[in-house]
Length: 149
Image 1 (cartoon, rainbow, N blue to C red):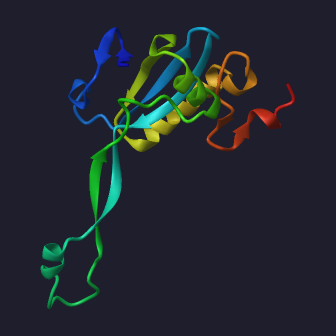
Image 2 (image 1 turned 90 degrees about the vertical axis):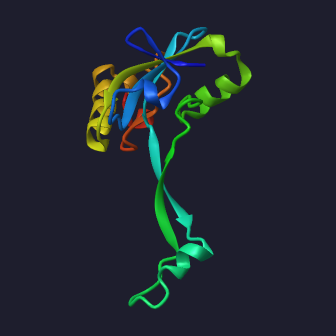
């Protein structure tokens, strides 16, 4: 299943504009007409254990010898359908044709990505409309269960 962005199909990281950090997206569940809004990073920082050969480079140097180094790896954005438990269950049970994955905003840094995800969630009143949205919280601070609906 591909991502749609402004009428274009996105299948590879090279399909994104240069220096893209991540994107804000909507996933539509066609049978229920419900939507999920989220954000996704294209790459992640991971710790990788140093090999014996790499450790030898530090031999005889002052200071503590590191055990790991940071590397960037591509995230699972190609197969990602959000973090909502109910939505993930539907993705497992139903065919891919029941879902549309749309990128609504491409972002070039972490703060902008978080800002736009939050903006869309508040503007569309996502947590106030559980019959229309899968989202149950915003930033882990504002929860559907806290609201007096």
